[in-house]
Amino acid sequence: MSGRIDPEFLRFPFRRVADAALHRALEHGAQHAAFRFAHTLEASWRLRDGRPAGTRSTTTTGFGVRVLYDGVPGFAAATEVTAEAAASAAGRAVETALAARPLAVGRISLAPEPVHRDRTWIAPYERDPFDVPAGEITALLADYSGRLGSAVGVGHTDAMLQVARETTFYADTAGTSTLQQRVRVLPEFTAHREDPAGELVSLRTVAPSTGRGWEYLTGTGWDWDSELAELPMLLEEKAGAPAVEPGPRDLVISPTNLWLTLHESVGHATELDRALGHEAAFAGTSFATPDLLGRLWYGSPAMNVTADRTAEHGLATVGYDDEGVAAQRWDLVRAGVLTGFQTDRGSAARCGAVRSTGCSQAGAFDQQPLQRMPNVSLAADPAGPDTEGLIARVEDGLYVVGDGSWSIDSRRQDFQFTAQRFHRIRDGRLAGQVRGAAYRSTTKDFWRSLEAVGGPQTYLLCGAFHCGKGQPVQVAPAGHGSPSALFRGVDVVTTRGGAPW
Image 1 (cartoon, rainbow, N blue to C red):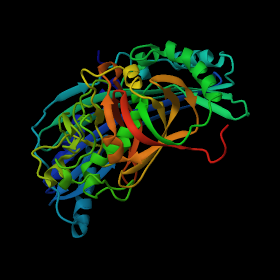
Image 2 (cartoon, helix red, strand yellow):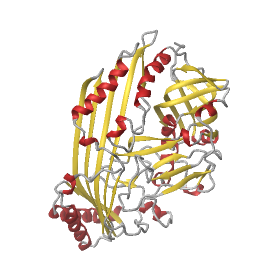
Image 3 (spheres, one colour):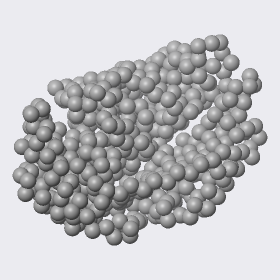
Image 4 (cartoon, rainbow, N blue to C red):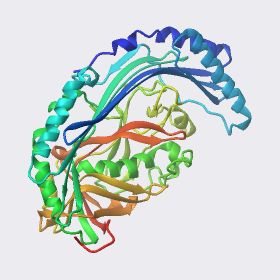
């Protein structure tokens, strides 16, 4: 089921405003021009021990005009949604391109894309979170917090919900025009207690952020009753857990943790602008360069990674990107070998591709579109085992659940990740938790140690609600799906410098 386009958005004269902007850009000699109007709502709620601890709500409305003049880009934005303001912005965008011409290194061209005229795409969701009364939202968060807080041993609870709705209209001088809307939600519930030494120990739900509506909080897509009932018992076990013993370990990693490793070591590493060295000023470049396409042994034969802008409920799912390119699905890694990159129209043309993969996105109406990550996911084995079957293959190792902290170098090679929970595996069975653990490796060594992936029943689509990139920094959501997966001989380290608890 899909929602409906925000009625407030439809009151704006965006088509007439777009026509004025594109007409003025062509009058000034632009080779190509694109208009993007966006109306974005974001809100968040926080509760501490079941009581309100802060709310935030923002609405941003405006448009940006992007031009190419003699292969040099120009951009301008405005908040006044009138034809006059649009024409003025288009003129400023051309002036910016003219001013940049003496400094431009090379010229930009755009990979071809079919014209998509008068297309509408609405993400599938049942209830718009912005249609839900604030009292209903607070009551549900308080109810879930109360379930955690009433459990024996839980000292404090935190609840947080972030929601966003983005409605956009895009038009360009080639004739493409698209109207789109999507929503996303990020709920988190955390329980805290003291361990025997008086140190605070915390555990957070592992329900992923998702491209769904309010229905996600009430049971569609996630079993909240089971997770909230189980969390206090897991927290009690964690509070009494011993310190991890460092050393090489076999790891079975849940998709609730592996999504972040995918994001950092595969998602960012296969952005073509980063691989070409054009993103070096923020978070580095990539070891996976275009000359290694089809030759780089990225991981084991069990590693198959796809990029997908069409996955249902994916955080990066769209109908069309911010250059008017239709959403697609393609391979990044096939049987362990690097086979693809993420591109926008400029980088696609630069590398001789026949078409962009549709990875252009702006973080806001007043920001130029950047090449941004799609849903980057590790494929399940159609005949693969369940998670218990993977655990049964391990004599001495760890089962890793829930995302924690992360660190990775500027070329996306050396990394370290923590988790919400590390469960010991002994002789193929879970044997309690350990604390203070992290796993570290290099990207290629880690993915080459992948022995097996679970079946479709272990697959879960997770992702990053806010991923930063660019200067000035822009944020965008990115989805990452994965099955449970078995890695052999990964270096496990302690995150604490002292003696065990």
